[in-house]
Amino acid sequence: MAPVLDPGWQNPYSPSTAERYANQHAVRSFALRKRLPITIVVLVVAVALFIGSFVSLVLPLLGVVLIVVYGFYARNSLIKFEHCGFSLGTLMLDTFTASGTTTDRQRLVIVLDRLAATFGVDAVSAFIVEDPGYNATLVPNGTGLSFFITDSMMRDFELIEIEGVVAHCLARHRLGLLNRESVASVASLSEDARSTLAGTANAYRADEVAAAAIRYPLGLAGALRKCSRQVLPSGSFFSTATYANWRWIWFDVWSDRDVLDMSDLDDVELRARALEEW
Image 1 (cartoon, rainbow, N blue to C red):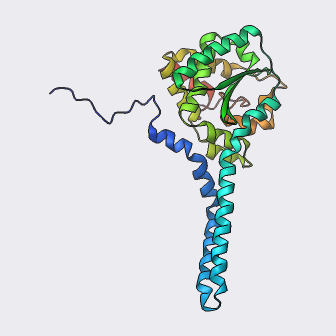
Image 2: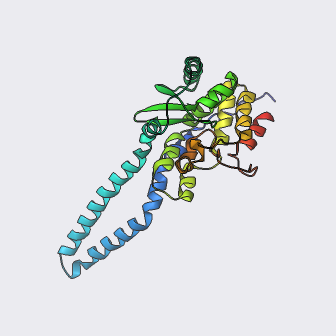
């Protein structure tokens, strides 16, 4: 029998349309679920007012006003919630101090420009920031994107490892993760709610997409290995409460973790081992 190509085959290392859609609409779905109890209460009250037409003709009118006012308020709140992550780039610029040598900046721009073309990303501004901890991130900054990387990572990592880190961050954009992770970082939420909104195992998934795109998983694995072996220096941003809120957007989600957790797919040690065995 002659071989037949499967028209429905999907490359597991490329984001599917359904996967991107789910990630891009995660913020809206989360907000609607969070608002569901009060929405039910408003609808129950409105129905009761409509039923009250037997008592007074004014009550149904009040029900209509209630639904219109609540709908307007809910819509504006949803838009504000969905867009609050756009401020994360500005917040980071206010938090960190610029650093890096001229050589470091040139290396970073070359890698970022080449990989941005590979991943189909435009208008990415790059910043090397002062911090002794190893980490990097790609975040929304208004209508554009900003890439942040620590000067210690630029100094201590090989060029092929920097390429892996940049590719991982761009892979998050390709997966449609940036908005859900940035909103989870800046919105006023509990720790559990942040985790739910940001999603789990997304860093692991971004590693897969990045490694497939650059076709050299060992560079990314080497970067993860260095992160797993680092003892976080005192005074690092990555040991602060702000980082605990912003962790979901960073390359190393658990920089402040003292003990490796091999049951967590987002742990850098597990991610390194998975790429080394790829």
